[in-house]
Image (cartoon, rainbow, N blue to C red):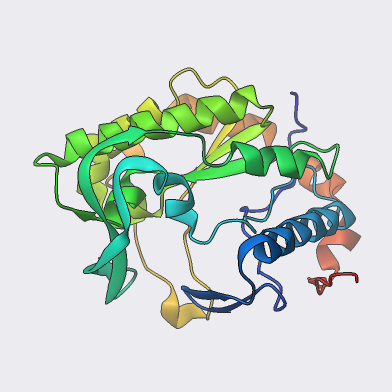
Length: 276
């Protein structure tokens, strides 16, 4: 699928409506259970897709309404991941904090698709192209407690192989763009150079649709919560040809064609409501 030089989209996740769940930063509590919860998640997905259409976005997402957790909606389906008996791990997100995380208890092996049905459900609500996201290998490692692997590079490549299977299935199911969320790359530059970049490449083996890597640079809540990372140590490893191609495509006239009036409009967010 061909995209315009300035194609509009979102990162992927949208706020869950209050009638679906109560969210306090990373703590999520759903208001329903069982079949009623699944129906409510799908209602929220349909509304989020409609909102993106009304905003005029070119490339839509499912809003991640079905994902109880972003990372383990995908990784929780793998052999070797225990999401039931969680443990406490100190995780760094601009500051150290204790988080409950799943345990890695065996070799990572993908068993079944996790997000393909989400993609199909989203495609049923729109004729615009859909983008789907998965967590990156370094972020899966950073968000779990490793009790099996002796070598982190081996761990990363097993995660990458599992993610590659998911991405290939999403591609086959008609996903227009694939995104890998890899915020851990902003924090561990030595690991990016050692194995993170190579594991990311392994995720994309056999992938021919356009791909995006999202580093999640920033958090809600104002400047005090933002991390202050620099990238001099990893930029030399980036593909210089890619930067040159982008600079040739994103020209001032393209930005002007978006319309100064549109750029001056205040941001808005539609309150999501369920009918009935």
